[in-house]
Image (cartoon, rainbow, N blue to C red; front, side, top):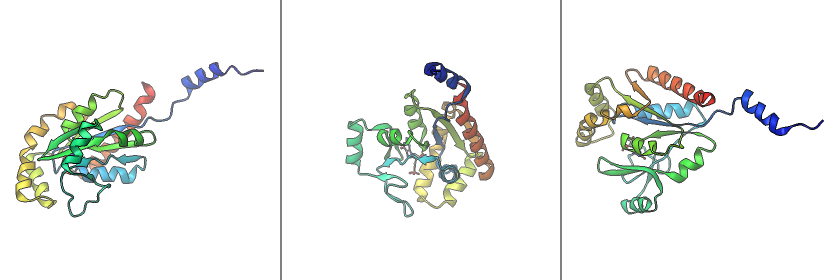
Length: 209
Ligand code: 5GP
């Protein structure tokens, strides 16, 4: 008997869930809310997640590695990448440029989920690409006092930079409404569990669309 393949495919589509779709998870927050730590924790636990490595014109910090934390590029090179339309999004933050390269996102998403540590400006720009399976999470501390404490204790920035980052909180938090989820980082482990729940839900949601 000859198998009616088109019929077989139809049945398969109905009764067999497709493979889980890869997601693009954006984590945005005011500077100092714990985003980088959480990003690394997710990547360690979920091997399928790759962190999107942005380009930036700022200088590397002592513990940062070119090509791992960022692609550190000159302003000339960055502007050239803007002109050649190479970015999905870019923004000027604290006097430096930051941007997400289209080529690397398009490559990674074929096989992996992607984690973005980008700001609200980048999130707005990425949201315009309707074909991207974005999940947008805004992370914040309980209050400004807590944020300042963390900015100082992580000891990454000069006092002037701490002040600048702290002062950008009010502008930053205005954009929480552009996100699918808002998570308050009172306790890192609790916060991580919440993110895990979001990932689980969002990875299975497309099966029901
Ligand atoms: P930092 O200099 O502390 O690494 O990052 C400063 C800010 O830039 C953070 O809020 C971070 O999320 C944001 N950022 C990092 N990479 C990108 C990017 O490619 N695009 C945008 N829009 N923001 C980014």
